[in-house]
Length: 141
Image 1 (spheres, rainbow, N blue to C red):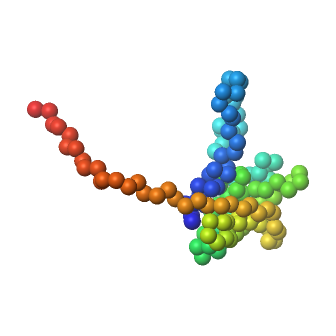
Image 2: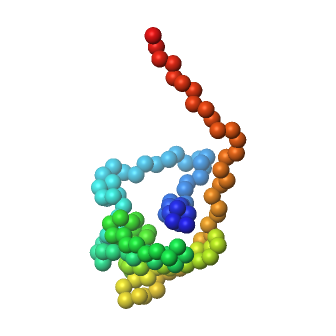
Image 3: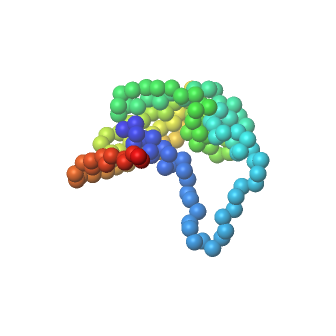
């Protein structure tokens, strides 16, 4: 599940992509923007608020718990915007069964922030067929 969750999170964080062939030339961001100066990190909200520091992950599907520093995760994991205020995420619970997952974020004082539902797909089957044999590389004489 952890690889599936990581894949789900990375897809969820990628966001919408521009459509090819839209007729608009691709525009590069201006040089020396804040985004280029600092790596994407959840230690500070988009509004400039400081994160309390740690996010505890409680995976109730695999019965394990781990902690990450807000500096190790992107802003989209470490913060939730509620109305016009950014709230820090300090705990993430993962629940579910089968291919369904419910990912719930909580703020300080156990305040509920948001829940996301995800459906995991099974990994693709292993390719069938003969095992390739190595071809020796000829050495020049």
